[in-house]
Length: 506
Ligand code: SF4
Image (tube, rainbow, N blue to C red):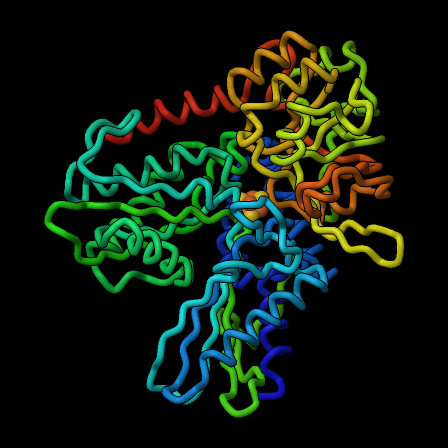
């Protein structure tokens, strides 16, 4: 099979860089449904540009290219051992080409393998079938949305919804709760794969497998088709909105399956995927390994542009910020302000935050802007190039952030999804702000980075290192200000109240 490896590299590249038509269509409807001028509409407009930029540059749509998960169907007699070797080689090659971020971390040592290969990475599921070709499907689902997966053991008590019983009404409550609890942390608008029943482990597998259905299909089981339609309608009334900014579109898809269960167990397993819903598939010739067809794509339909206009629509009300920041400039900001940042920014995520709790920073952080970001970087000669650089979920840094702000004089933190009460208090006391970037807009933000000035702590691996970046007009929204106001807390409260009303009125 002389073409096998290159076919698989092409599958990975296309999955990482070019959203499938059903997802594009759903995102087009989401963009059309949002009220113009709102923060959600602004976020969707940047997402649309980002989707186009990823195709133009064949760059990752989002910097978090997730846990590559392959589902492979082979005719009887195909050597699955060879196929597995080719998939692993293709994953390593796609990583080398900057289409996948090195994402595989040894859970005992914390070491990043650098090529996305490791124990049980990538994930590969094989099945035999009675057709002549090989089918390979791939989903790239990042950590932000993966962390918002949730499993309910019913009966259970749910915030704002009361008791969920062992029936379809209880399942409905669980699914609505899943959308609500994700808020903006999984980069809404999201899509759900749901499994009713099975056991804990297989329930999650089956839920994730539902994400291989197209968003516009209709469930063949009438009760589930009805439930899917109800959830789509109701979840979009809760008001989480794009990035959790509050708005009309929280969900672009809901796909549900049911599997038999043990009499004692009743699980509802929910796989939450983000708007960067990357899944594709190919049919391969069994003799040569060449691609003979694409799944999820309509060859007669060219890739259509998502953005209605170039770039981000400026209103003239944006606040220009230049790092390092003064306390005065930061205290003048209020929730809802759109800022355009220029100057120096330092990345830092889990490993950097843990390091700074015990060690002094390798750079002066007084007045600095800390960016929760694990970029995709390529080294060409001695020069590092940014290939993708959107924000990561900030709540993971909650245990550390307040100490770091207070101790080192950080004036702004950029991330996504908001932070908790400790950070809120530190921002207020120290005179600092939290700025929400648009999650997943990795190409858009890569273009705001003019230069990589330096890198520290590279021993933590590319995503976890502390990158010193020079940015220009880097757009973000103030979602927690230095006066104790938080858009995230407001939206969580308002959407909770709407969730409650949905149950009362049903
Ligand atoms: S779009 Fe958001 S949730 Fe999805 S992979 Fe990217 S950062 Fe993670």
